[in-house]
Image 1 (tube, rainbow, N blue to C red):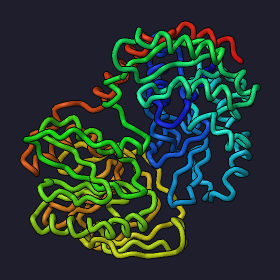
Image 2 (tube, rainbow, N blue to C red):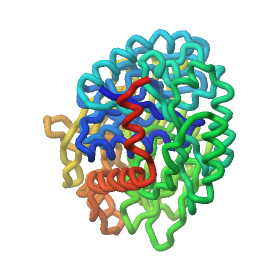
Image 3 (cartoon, helix red, strand yellow):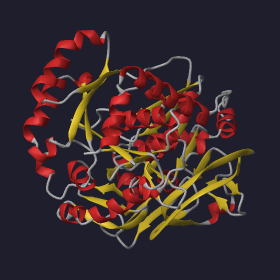
Image 4 (tube, rainbow, N blue to C red):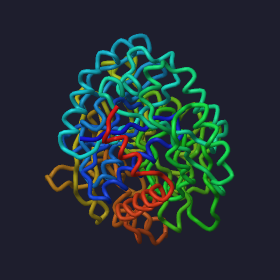
Length: 485
């Protein structure tokens, strides 16, 4: 069984996308491929076939491999819920909360379970493609590391290092990594890839040779800017810091970026709609008054995000939008914010607390330790829907007597007000349904739902795989993976 690990010189250098591209390229060769990330930190997650949860990037990489996501693909997931605490997910299940003070000790103790997942995964396939986290050059975090070189050495997996030329300083970042890491760690690295190149790659020939000469590592290609990657869901919140290109003549759908926003890829299918302009509203800016729809996203710390929403004055914008008859949709934590009150008596998100919601739905939510994780199907607004629930909390009140969706198992989801312009749902992936987008956008006078999101996603994976294969030495990468460390 072969294995290869892609690490990066820093965050957001494109590790997740290149792992997905390599996974699809190898799957297209007929190999049984599985993705793996020992430790991830993200509030964008997906429910797996075995009823657990993993980082959204690994779920996408599983799709690239043409297999169902499994909790073994990301055995340790940290979900930040306050400035210094994160929810700890191990093998897809909540295990507790980690603070900055005990993170390193707890992390190192998880290596055994990481290796157990890796061993189970590699027994099912021909090759495992592993993604690192952050950078191996963060030598201050090396002790107890399970995400980069700690895992690579424990599992004896060879590494290829990715440098991002778009941000500048790629020669220094690659050669500098070689200079600062331990000799034993450097020995695990078999070569490098240059990512996000714009223009004629021949212009970088001298730089490429300089990296090879100064690092002692061979290069495996210069990967161009992969335009199709923009059609893939992003796991990293860095993407939210980038302004969208304005497009005139579209109806606006606005989503405020709360501090602990989660699963913001729920909104990605809306980008397929030619009549829609999706605007992610950063702190310090009002929600546009001309918005046709306001979407309140998921949250990893609903009470804190509700307070932040109010501090930004966004509650005033939302209530004004409601008075004008505008459509409001709350997803998961956003659904809880639409209610009258949210309570956390056990301090699951921090200190025990409670807060008033927006009061647009006649429901209340009490957070509880039990976490709901399940795939569901049903109907809503006369359209077929499919997605997953991932939340902690029980929502009750007269409002749920007007549910948003009826599920195939006979249960109900969410709530909708009497006027039909305030919708709350626990369903992630709601907008991926073409029928649902069509039904929802019809309420604002837009014809939509013409494109299949899943098919578009699959086509984008094929496109990035084809482009990657055209510029990377995949045969060379395979030889490294098969030879081992």
